[in-house]
Image (cartoon, rainbow, N blue to C red; front, side, top):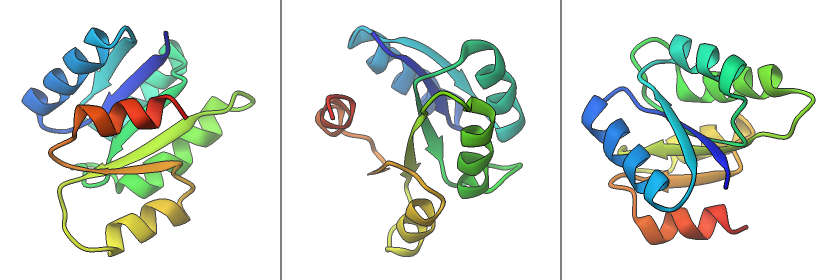
Length: 117
């Protein structure tokens, strides 16, 4: 069982994604903005974070970098998630050090493949 944080500004999407991950046997928390994600990370100490790249208060790439610093010395697996088409968001996410990338709507099989790596 992994501790997973879902950072998603759409509450319905965050709750649905968290439900899927819990159904897969993981312990899950979610945050609806970058500030909340940093607070949850400090207390929850997730192994994996799914970060929406377009949050209202912070760029997802910047948040990914901040989460890595906060998680040290532990290794944090960060997955960028976006509904935006095109390669620019993925390029920025990978440059920010994200370990994986998913497009919305998120496919359960794609999530399962990422979590078994």
